[in-house]
Image 1 (cartoon, rainbow, N blue to C red):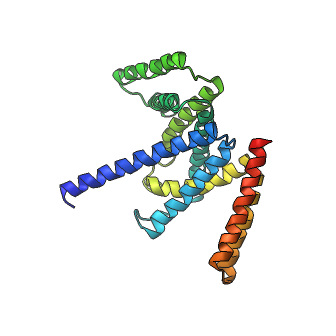
Image 2 (cartoon, rainbow, N blue to C red):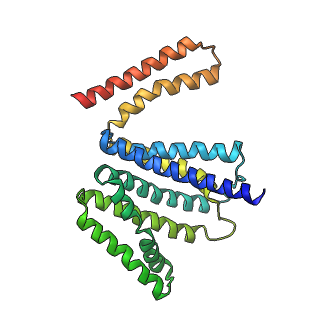
Image 3 (spheres, rainbow, N blue to C red):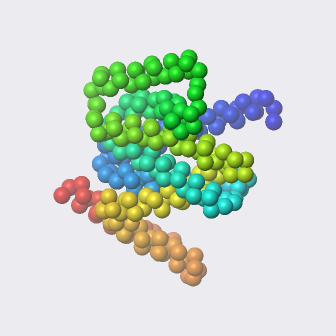
Length: 264
């Protein structure tokens, strides 16, 4: 690959990264704050389900990176621990978006290096040069000043956001500790492949317990899932009109439930 093509390829990846990351952030903010979707845990579960599916397709079918296998129960337990911490980080971030402006949410998230340095010192006794620590002072001071001057400040949202930021840093340090040996180290896509299904298993009971109305959403989806699985298993013929009719029914039931929730 020529230098020009390589540069364009890297720029395309950066653009895709920026657009997808910012797009998910803004969509989550719209759903949780403007639209009135009150299920941040369920939203996180959907996010992790998509991560599981897309990472599997990327690795197994598209072969973007080679598949790495989990070699021991110990390694799987470490991945499960990371996945649980990661769940807490994403859920906390989604909850904070319901109460805080995106700009302030991102300002608080920028303090991740401070928490990373703190956890690295507490957990591994790793010390940096004093100049490195000094550069973190304006990072923290900036958030304190921004909090004071933020008209949309919400204490609960701030606590959730700072907790999510700390959890993200904790996961980063923990990952370096748990998967430090050469035989257990996974690249980012394979780590996501194994973390995502575990995250879904952690989040599903949490959503059912803490967000009971999720049962209504899952109930609406159950019929559609059953139809798809039955077609795949029994290979019974279906027509376009039949699919269109059933889709209309499912969407109608979902719209009815949403209308009852929003206009009661």
